[in-house]
Image 1 (cartoon, rainbow, N blue to C red):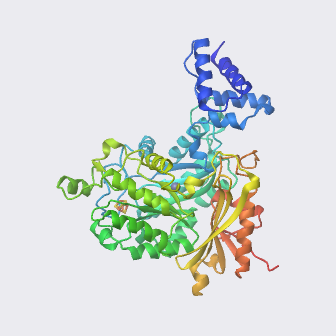
Image 2: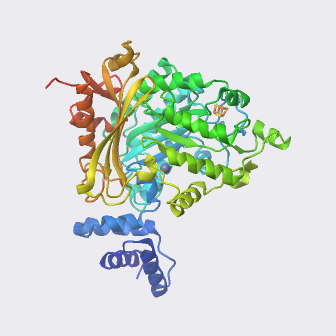
Image 3: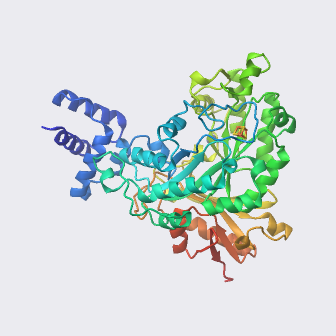
Length: 551
Ligand code: SF4
Ligand SMILES: [Zn+2]
């Protein structure tokens, strides 16, 4: 038997035996290896064979089996595929002491971080980076039809505007072109299909509305003091929906000591502008900065959770590490900086996880820097797992983290009879936020959430700086969790496509109408515009809008 026949036989056998977990899959692989004297079969080969079998006999389709053979399913378990690309090395106006400046590498990154290594291999070319990631995801069995694009690399706002526009246009073009028909089969070479080459950013965006790989969100990272009304309007033209912002600490003395070049007031101003323009915000916080104490770090988290002007959506917590090519490296060598004891950092983060609000997602607890590049740090590479283990083992003392990431339904089956719609209302940046969620109460899992904002202008009666948002309530996020399912499909048992999105949208519209808003606007990723059109929205400027009629 040739390899393709063996692989086909393997998949048929696996489906017959109803293999549902990795251990059983591996046992069968071992069985086949010794029977046919071959190396262990690769999941990639199994995926291709499985696809062919299902094409011939669609009733053999098994979602559970697909999940077992998909590699790294965790990256798509929150419903979308995240693709990170990196801008070329460029200067940053900041002088932060902890930030590395490595030659040929974008500011604040290290040459041996996995994402940066991929970018280097692709010469920081956005198209090649996107296609490379799509190739990896599709090769591993993902559809990658809903893609959240994450642009990393120092301070995005500081790059020449022309470079930014060009970079983003090429990113959309890569999504529009996809990998070409042949790519998705056995051929692994990236092919430039060319026919959909878009000449302008707007055209590339328009094409993406119906492309195979739709951009459902786009994030960039920048400094708070670079956020202005004008800058946000420019970001909207690029299609940005989320902004990662370096807050780092809430105490001015610590910000100054670390040469951040802005105070906490600048962070508050930036956050209000971003929220009022509908952006979702990821705040970066750094415990263990030079000059800070554990007590001040804990207070920093309290500030971010309790001060309405600092409340955020997502959090990246990066405990300060001493890395080469940073000013802190010298401070450390001169004995001017010391990392916390590891246990102290763990204790701090466990305390933080006890008080994190339900509307926050802690997306990261550490940077992706390899240990070999860290001269000193209180952190460990498996910090998140370690903290979770401690909490799980001491449940009489600690409660499990209630952040979004820890409650996402992922690949678990939704118990529809036990789902509930909940609304958490809180003040933020001079406006009012409503975190509307659908939760599976039987498992304490989050199936979907929507962020509705009554902007600060609604309360201050000031004119909005974005014309089309005048008098509008804002939907800043609508996210249905669960394993990615193809656009248009309706796969059983998954949180996506159960109508949760529609329910949340209706609830948001109702709330806005009751508060007297005559319209509601969504900051929608380019690739989700179609969804909103189907729900009665139309494009105005860069937002999807709906007129709310009095009933
Ligand atoms: S602003 Fe960001 S990229 Fe610039 S120096 Fe500071 S940490 Fe580094
Ligand atoms: Zn959590």
